Length: 212
Image 1: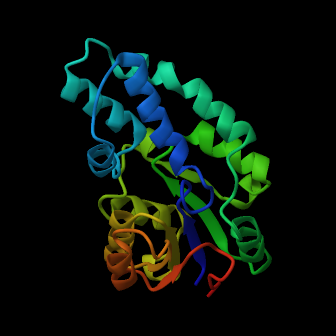
Image 2 (image 1 turned 135 degrees about the vertical axis):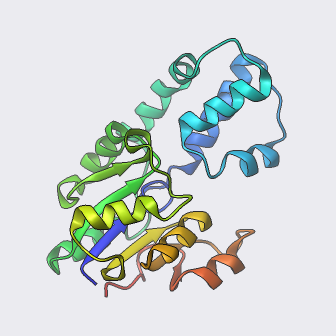
């Protein structure tokens, strides 16, 4: 395999709680109420600006996305800059890929500045040829198109690429695109059986993941 496409949140870094906390802090600030499990189910496949759009529509808020974003983003930035840790084995995995001459990029629903910030702190930003962000590109990992675009930019066929992911919907898209999929997942996840049926490999973190 020549190309390695990395998801960011939940795959390279342990940050999913940051965005969940941001949503619930927003609810507190605006005195909104929503069942926690329902919120996780509704918002899980969305990029953050889509989550904010959905909140505006659901609660008929007289605010725009930018205003909601400004209410929570400073704390998110602070955590990405200073405290969000890498997934176990992630930094060494990237470095081993580099030593073996693999071509790498990040394919994420997150925005580019936050992605660059945390990868720079972890010392692996320069290992990535580019960051393909849903926020900037308008693409989504709910379909194969985003993975196909990443492979195109690497000038590789998707069959020559490995996608490392933690979200089932993204794994399915990567498989449809033709990639080999390595999942980062825990056995206690509700969708673990589906992840095992979808991905080519499943690991709790990246310490035991293969480099092909």
